[in-house]
Amino acid sequence: MSHRVYLRSLGCRLNQSELEALARQLAGRGCQVVDDPAQADICVVNTCAVTAEAERKTRHLLRALARANPQARIAVLGCAATLRGEELAAFPNVAWVIPNEEKERAVEALTPSPLPPSPSPVERERGRGVGGVGVRTRAFVKIQDGCDNACTYCIVHILRGPVRSRPPEEVVAEIAERVREGYQEAVLTGVNIGAYGRDLGRPGGLAGLVAAILAQTDLPRLRLSSVEPWDVDESLLALWPNPRLCRQLHLPLQSGCEATLRRMGRRITAAEYARLLERIRAAVPDMAVTTDIIVGFPGEDEAEFAESLAFVERMGFARLHVFPFSPRPGTPAARMGGQVPEPVMQERAARMRDLGERLAARYRRRFLGQELAVLWERRRRDGLWHGLTDNYLQVVTACPADLHNRIVPTRLVGEQNGFLLGEVV
Ligand code: SF4
Image 1 (cartoon, rainbow, N blue to C red):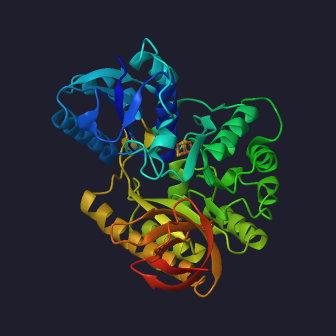
Image 2: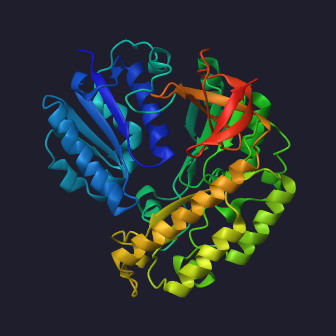
Image 3: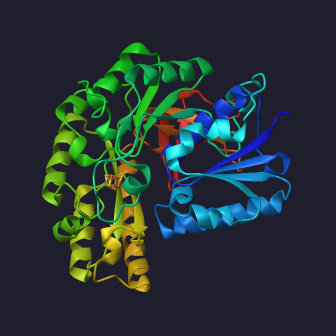
């Protein structure tokens, strides 16, 4: 019997790309991917454990799925399955708990006897997203897994193990396939993509892979997900004259305070980070540099937080992702003295987010009056189209034509609730 499978991903883009790959494998074994859990006989959740909040969302979703469809069996994959396997196995309807090291074989566990392939889930669902997997204009392509760093707050490198990279030929072939399917943009994802290729014993690294993708495929747009700042070198920066490479670099900073960064075990100082940003902006003046910031790391007093806040302001980021510190079991930071009380942490998060909004507004206003190419992704409930420029500006427009999955020159004429208003040229 053919299975009907509902897929949900929590957490990072890597989880999303893994789930998209699983959707394709399941379709290849005769399963039908559905976008309503009530229609499914198997529900798959790719989980996240990066914070206590992410784990809470996992538990909440598992209960909601069991309520929405008491007949469906549930498969729990990923980081929370690795960290909390026994606990999650006891949740209602959970039939499989598949930790990260067994994830690659998840498709065989879920469908022991394959059937003839069903139509590609991407073709069938274009424009709607596959069971919450994502928008069908940008493909998230996994290029590596794991991380060899040891940031003291991080559980991801513990749960996902050391760096393992996919061979470049395989990545290029996958992207060529996504281009044939009609995708306009691919986002390279992984736990630590700056470390790409170090385990393969071949020269080139991430810069070599990006160069190969640009040279060997017709992909209109290529975007990098998060790159650790110490992995950005001249060979990577030298690629940006190519207009198909999106002018966005997500460089996790985590704190702008030198002492906090040392306790975090980060491999860069704030001063080195500032010098790197100068080099990046000299090479690519309009680059959208976005970042992650943790507030309330153990030992962060008001003076350290103020140093971090002032540094973030000086760096002029295009967007901030702010996370209150969340102690993760088994990490050095969870055992450190000076844990910051929750109300203090929340107050600092609010101040940092407020700064983030001001910086984002400052960045996007630089582009008012300019004409930029926008990849239009979806029509919102209010009827406006929503899309992204290559430098990660979010644009909306009122347009009667079907703009879905088209890259169109657009004049940026105003602002509306944190979005830029565009006029399609
Ligand atoms: S670079 Fe640090 S934060 Fe990122 S995955 Fe590796 S250890 Fe974790």
